Amino acid sequence: MRALQWQGVNRLAVGDVPDPELRNPGDAIIKVTRTVTCGSDLHLLGGYIPFMQKGDVLGHEFIGEVVEVGPDVRRHRVGDRVVVSSFIACGSCWYCDQKLYSLCDNGNTNPALTETLWGQAPSGCYGYSHAMGGNAGSHAEYIRVPFADVGAFAIPDEVSDERALFASDSASTGWMGADLGGVQPGDVVAVWGAGAVGQMAARAAVLLGADRVIVIDRLDNRLRQVEKHIGAETLNYEQTDVAGELRERSGGRGPDVCIEAVGMEAHSPGPQFGYDQLKQQLRMQTDRPVAVRDAIHACRKGGSVFVLGVFAGFVDKFPLGALMNKGLTVRGAQMHGQRYIPMLLQRMARGELTTEHLATHVMPLSEAPEGYRIFKEKEDGCVRAVFIP
Ligand SMILES: NC(=O)c1ccc[n+]([C@@H]2O[C@H](COP(=O)([O-])OP(=O)(O)OC[C@H]3O[C@@H](n4cnc5c(N)ncnc54)[C@H](O)[C@@H]3O)[C@@H](O)[C@H]2O)c1
Ligand SMILES: [Zn+2]
Ligand SMILES: [Zn+2]
Image (cartoon, rainbow, N blue to C red; front, side, top):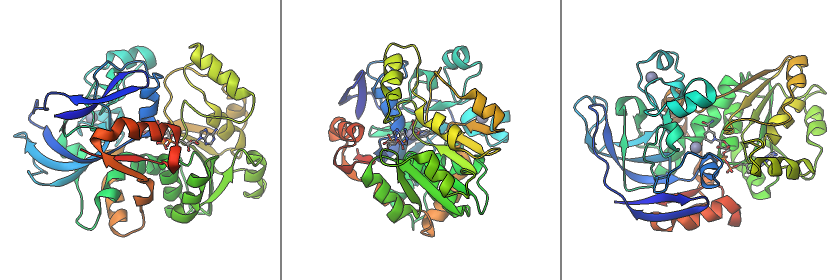
């Protein structure tokens, strides 16, 4: 079958790989019908997560049709239209019992790398390097889905492909940020990053009853999308004193909940950017935590900061003093898709959560390397490039 393969730092190509086969009784084989780029893939493409091997198939956000099921699969039949959580979970370990699916003990078949790096291994993800299980990704004609009863969900007829697709990863991630970040009715919520993840976090905060939701970025087309489709306010960090403006909009206190949806390749306008970038390139730090610093600084005393952006290792100038003295709660996580997808599909069916505007570019899988280039450069207003295998 045809698949998009990682061929080295900033090198992608569509090539032939063997068709996936059932390996365990709970597996299903899915014919991928839509799969989409994610900001997380850029970290792999740029070599910031150094556990890719030449030939690995990328992609973790997808929908498709069930074409084969193992003997233990009960909830799905051949022909079902399904959306699949980007993180893989067994559904029966201690962490899955706590609904912390991306921390599942059985979803990562290669836990040694992350155990060494972080003390314990999170679960596995599709197309997300050998640190996350080395699973083949979804930018391919077919994909093997382990624990299909736990990770795949039937898509209601009322929900379009373009909408359901984003339940797989960005919408679940965004919802998790607002939910575990503790958004309460009446809160002021600030979100850094107006990519698909930040937009979905902002929409979740709106739907959870936040009084004001403010999204921060510098890309005008994305900020316009936020105003039009998400129903949130915006701030351009290149034109505004963000911390001051956030205080203004929150009765002088600062936001109750700050959600960071930028990640390890954050940009910043000041001289600090060059400093952070140089240290990262010299491998003196693995990540550029610009937006995390800003969120901790802006957050009201006693507020909460949720880190959705992906980070790999160590950062420089982490404001531990502000965190401690301001009594902040800081959390982060990879997405617990299995916990949110059924609810998100219901909201999508009711029209409360729309995502079509995120799919700014749609193209055949054969054009995926160009799609990634446009997405990486944020060219032509690209928010997400969707591939049709
Ligand atoms: N936790 C999870 O499970 C999970 C799931 C999906 C994605 N992610 C991560 O979420 C992050 C965002 O993903 P995405 O797909 O929306 O990415 P994206 O690249 O499309 O968007 C990132 C946005 O952040 C903006 N930005 C850069 N520096 C900024 C700054 N200092 N302040 C404010 N905005 C800034 C960029 O202009 C861009 O619009 C990535 O790090 C990705 O890896 C995490
Ligand atoms: Zn993702
Ligand atoms: Zn589990």
